[in-house]
Image 1 (cartoon, helix red, strand yellow):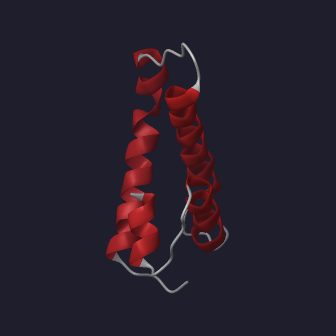
Image 2 (image 1 turned 90 degrees about the horizontal axis):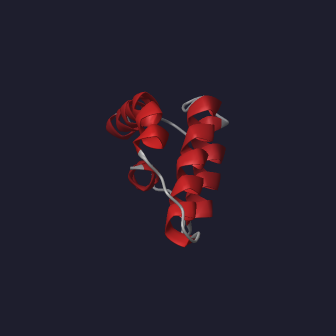
Length: 88
């Protein structure tokens, strides 16, 4: 969804780190995405990385369920930014 946001504003990134950087530069620094949601996005990325690459990691419902409301908030924010092309 974050990549779709970048594309909708004619921005590109070739790596996950690049997506995070572009989100920060073009949306967080300009107040379009809160720093709270940006930190959350980075946290989700780090969880995904650990899940993909760490040995013997377990991510259970107790880890995920507390994140649902922030995921919904992030998705709502990003969807609104995609639908309403803002001036960057």
